Every structure is written in structure tokens, then in C-alpha cells.
Length: 457
Image (cartoon, rainbow, N blue to C red; front, side, top):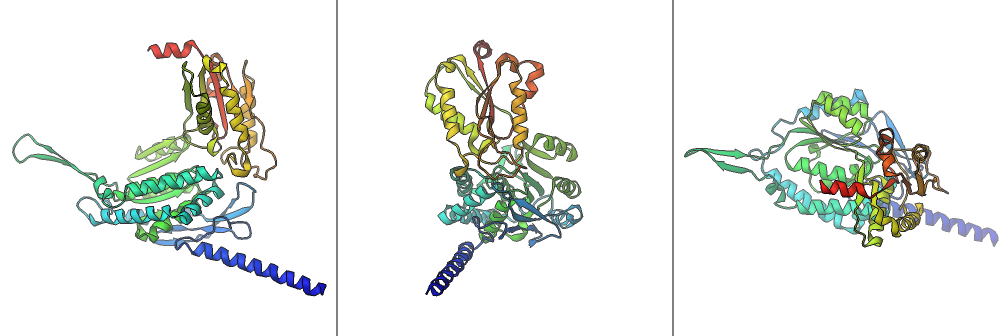
């Protein structure tokens, strides 16, 4: 009897495992464009990310492995293109004429095509199952709270909704100016660059590349898109969604590579314009290499100033907490330094910010891995700041506890350091204090006459 009972239990367990596997397969394939399962990606079931060139999805002889930022498990394989493999991408961009894939005189029906594609994509992203898929996928590669990740999806969906139907055509609206005499007029047209490149960072894996990519496509450009390899799986799935919505396979190239290879591709393919979002150091190099044919959205050290009028302390504390620590401080707009008029020191602002920061936890990803700095690097910066006379730790300053975040990433509690304003202004301290730490880290200063004097002029 016992043997029969155990056998029954084993059979039930096997049945449950089979059903789980079956449901996993169904959940993936119930969305027609999806090739991965957002929550099922693991070391035993790694996802694969391919390249797209000349209308074909392709693998590579070299596969780069991405580790799960929450547990260090290798869970995504990237088909990485090296310097010897860029020729198909160079050829693809070279086939696009300087006047683009469409313009006000050539193939104007493509404006309507992209209006239709955009409408379909907007509708798909509004479907809860699709929205949840992208939200969960973002969380897997750039861990942030569900609400923060969902915000990316919602912004992208609204952007697509705004450019549905005739809006792409209206975006290409031209102008005419009367001339000096009868029969003379000046006409201006929104004209594509032709072959272009888009390079985007890790912190907003869907919102940044999707919005930039669609803007390029609307105007008739042929883009090659490179997203940070740590998060490129999100945009790969978005491109597959766009194909499902009618986007021609050959309109976009998608490449996975390191920075050196991408730099060589840009020099050989010579795109008419490159849009780069990322570090200022890389931006400066590209500006020289590409001889100015580049648009930049680079890093920033963001300031917030609270003037002498004190009100809505609870709300201000909430805003400061969100600005400094949401997405673990890995936003281009993250609050890097907070200047407070001394009137705020008499309030409970700092204690309220401390309480809000301490509510953040790894379990719901309101705080999480820092993908560009190690814990040691952030603590080293903190210790250097604390050596400045009069500086002090307001809260945080310790590594996260009870986690399995790999050591290549950072894991720090939300941290705030007070540094006296007169010390911040010293030449020897200024560069240190204003160094951008792309993580849950901010500096605070207090002033009185400084702002009053500033406001007079």
C-alpha cells in the first residue's frame, strides 16, 4: 500500500510538472510575437537574443552570456557580433539612399503604413497580458518595482497611441513662405537622414529605444539599433511585436555587440546621423569620431533646490525619495544633490525621507541591483565624502542584506550624505561632491544667504 501511495504521489508530481511545462509553453505562444517566457527564464531555460539584419533574424558564432542581476545565474545568451561580422550591417545601411525609405515625394503611403502599425502596436500594448509580459521582462533584466516597469510600458503605449492613424503623416507637415515677387515661394520639408544609428542604455530597456526608434522610422530613416546587451532582450521582443503589427522586416537592423565593434560599424557604415543616449565619456568620443553627425543625451548630475518657503513637507519628502531612489537611482533624472534652505532644517523633512527610504526593500524591487557600479565603489565614494570636514551620514551607507546579487553589480541601501555648502564650493572638493553616482546615492547641502543672493541676480 505504501509503495502504491508513493507511486501515486510520484505520478501526481510528474503530472504537475508536465502541466506546468505545458502551461509555460502555452503562456509563451499565446502571444503570437513572443519567443521567451519572462518569468521562466533561468539557467536551465536560458533565453536567446538574435540579431536582425537585412530582414533576417540571425544567430552568431559567438554567444555572450548575461547573468541574472538578482542571483548571478547565467540566464540569457546573446548572439554577439564581433568586428569580423559587421559587413552585413554595413551593406544593409548602404542600401538605404540619402533621401530615405520614404519622404514627402517618395512612397508617401508609408506614412499611412506606419500610422497603421503604430495603432496596432498601441492596441497590443494596452492588452493586460501583453503589458504584463513586457513589465515582467523589464523587471528580469533591469530590476525595478512593478509600477516603475509598468510605467515604461504605459509611456510607450501612449506614445504609440498619439502617433496612430494620420498623425505620422501630420508629423511630416511642411511649410511654404511667400517670396519677393509673383510666382516665388520658399518651401520646406521634413526630410529623412537616410541611414541612421540608435544606441541606448540599460536603465529604460523599452521606453528609450522604442520611442527613439519609432521617431526615426516615421520620417523614413533606416536605423540600426543597438541596446545595452544586459537588457537587449526587451527590445528584441518589441521589434518582433512591431513585425507582427505589419512593420516590414527590412526596415530596422538590430545588432548585439560590444562598444568597440559598434564604433567600427559606425565608422564603416557612416550613417548620416547617430542618436546616442549614455555616458558622457562615450558621447565625447563619438562626437569626434563621427565629426559631429550625432545627437546626444548623455549623463547628468541633477540638482534640486528647496527655497525658503516651507510647505507640503510630506509631499516634498515623497518627491525627493522618488527622484533619488526609484529605479535604485538609475534614472537620467535621478536627484544627485539636494540644496535646502535652512528653514527646511526645522522641519521633519530629513526624517521623513529616511523613513521612506527605509521602506524600500529588495523583495518588491523598490530597491535593487545597481548595474554600472559595485557596492565597493559606492562605499568608497561615500567614505571619501565623509572625510570632508563637517560631512555626515544622514541614512543608509550600508550594503543590502540577505541577497544573492552578484558581486559585479552594486547592492546598497538608499544613502544620503550631508556636506556643508562652504565645503562643496571648495575647489578641492567640488569635483568629488559632484561626481555622478548612478545608484541610490545623493548629497545634501544647506544654505541661507547663498540662494537669497542668487535670486537677486
